[in-house]
Image (tube, rainbow, N blue to C red; front, side, top):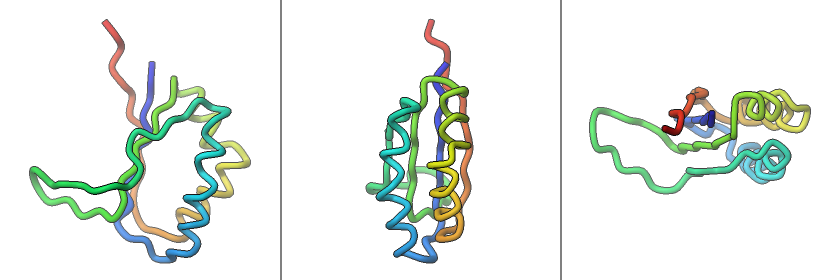
Length: 99
């Protein structure tokens, strides 16, 4: 079942480091079949209050592929860059099973 890694960046505190992070992420996804569905771009708040500077959704075929990527040496180093250069939150959401 597909899973979705959702990252909501409230503030980028170190733009240079965050830019380095962004440059490196795509190459780490390919071996784990990860694919960007949303990567930045404009947002329109339709309901409630939502404060975000950057919103990202990455899909993976399953949780095993996601965890392989998330804990890989290649992404672990980049993840630390993202965390040090921004404030935000991240979740892993399970998709719906096809009927």
